[in-house]
Length: 221
Ligand SMILES: Cc1cc2nc3c(=O)[nH]c(=O)nc-3n(C[C@H](O)[C@H](O)[C@H](O)COP(=O)(O)O)c2cc1C
Image (cartoon, rainbow, N blue to C red; front, side):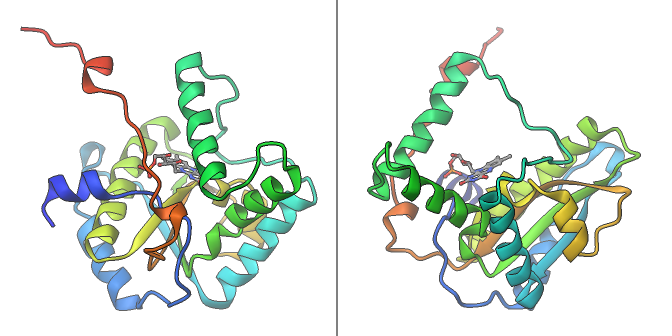
């Protein structure tokens, strides 16, 4: 798989096979991902790889928080207002997911069940959490985290694994600190669920859209 193929064929995986991801494979991926660029080669990312019993505990507790109506308080605040065009895209992907799963828009129970599955990290056998020290300039360090996170998703894909970047995994940092070795001085930026994709699942195969480059590119000659 060359880089063009990796970038254009990677997609978010929302149904995983239960097979565990061998630790050697994750190490190989991290060995490669560490070559991602960062400001001044500072490499500010701190990564927690979670699997096994600890992950099972976290997944269930994360879902429970959602079901209990606990208000998410991510270390990195999520935007509440979007310009219309971005909001439309966000709504579109939500619709696509529901249609693919044959969940009617008005079926609140099924929708909550799906959101619960998301907070269960789609039952992925592995979670990679990306964190940075709270003392750093967060916005800038997040550029670096974005770079390594995408590299990891591509490398994962190149090795036949699947990933889903999940804000839903970082919604309750207090819970993460309770279950996982994350100090108060560290901020969770985002988590990536990974595992072997269920290749046949419609949720892993629906068509996705992107804006045409002309819509977001200005050429200056
Ligand atoms: C910062 C970030 C957070 C995301 N959080 C979620 C999430 O909580 N749940 C989810 O199903 N997908 C999540 N995604 C995946 C996006 O929905 C997905 O990348 C987007 O729809 C484009 O689809 P693709 O990844 O299949 O190309 C997230 C992606 C990013 C970059």
